[in-house]
Amino acid sequence: MRIRFVQDIFDRLRGKNTVGRGLAVTVTDTQDTGIDRLFETFPSAGFEINGRTRKHLTNVNADRGVTEQTLSLLCKQFPSNRTGIKVLNVGCGKKNQMDFLAALGFEAYGVDFDIDEDSEHIRFHDLNTQDDLPFGDLRFDAVICQEIIEHIENPWLLFRKVKKVLKTGGTLIVTTPNISSNHSKRVFNGNNVGFFAYFDPVNLWQHINPIPYWEMIHIATFNGFETLGLSGNNEFYVTYTPKKAGAQRDATIQNNDVLHYLLRNTNEDIRLYSPVPTHNYDWSAGARTARTEP
Image (cartoon, rainbow, N blue to C red; front, side, top):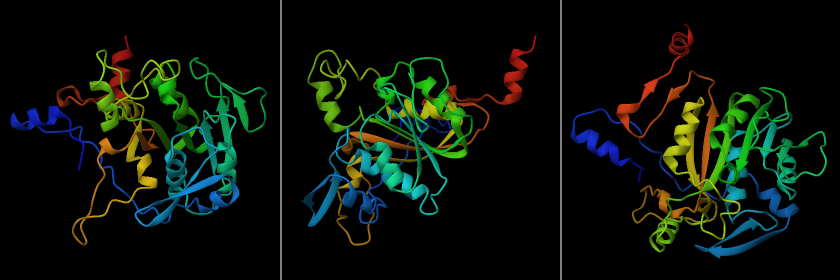
């Protein structure tokens, strides 16, 4: 199933070209994730589902499947020869996130607000300030922003900061609660003020920015990122069995409480993206120059 904006339907009926289609959320083979070694080194647990034992890391500050899917996506982008591959974990915290990356063969770096003392690889940084990330420009092959963007005041600023330190062609993985999930919709419909799941009064002290799919793609595209894929935390440990042999089954966006956005830094001209096709336009370097010249 593909995510389509309602605006597409109206524009199609009016004979207009359609843009703004979403990406398929596809259930992948969970047998080869590239992170099996972590379960042998770090605390983990297993459970039975569909006749298989699935493992997940236990000493993590995230829902089951979120960290595992993030690291699996990263390993697929860099399947071998990870020596010298620099990965920045934005919001690395004090748990095992950095150790996971190092155990997988990456050169791990991190920034976080909750850092007592700077080191060579981990630096203090407040994402709500205008300050650049405390590393050199175009330094990293990949950047991870796992469950961070919903905590900060300005998600657009986060993308601008990341773009400065990420190499051209580098990979960015952003995860955030899926406010369009079936669970979130039930929460939203069950109250009178429009709270989404994970953005209710219990969580508002930390989760301040619910970001829908279309807004994430809008911010990423405007800042010169290409969307490579969209997946959810459930994909790591749930298998969907097709009804017919050889058929393909996609998991809809509604079945995942946390979404993983896989993006690539293209360093192209800024191109405004909008779910409303009539408002799309290219903002090329020439156009920007023309508008700023007296």
